[in-house]
Image (tube, rainbow, N blue to C red; front, side, top):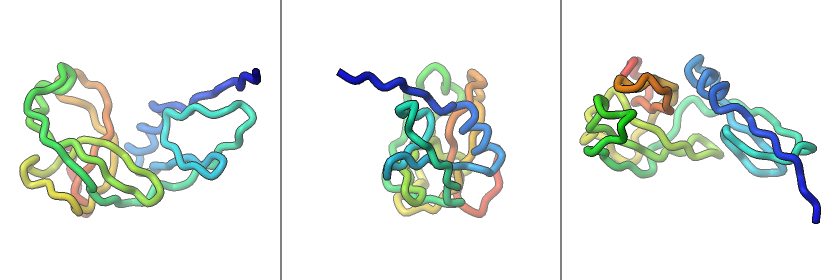
Length: 131
């Protein structure tokens, strides 16, 4: 039985890149990945720029929060397609009940008001918002 040594690409570094407006995804053997991603040690990872905007494909409203997000609810969590990759994040800068599928969004990283932990955040494309 062959065992491959795995390596992980860093989630914190990926959040830093999102926050700086330099989001990316990884290509590996014809697959697209976003960190954290496990790959074989000998596998070459290609870093590709993440499209500037994506489209909300699905959403749900969270009214009973996880402890890390207590002060942030209610909030909308969405699955959005950014070219070849699909991301999950919290939509900010818009009333959660106003979020619809098809909404064009930009991605960044923000910190929760409750715990200060970072998370993937979407905001309506073309709008600048810290929250």
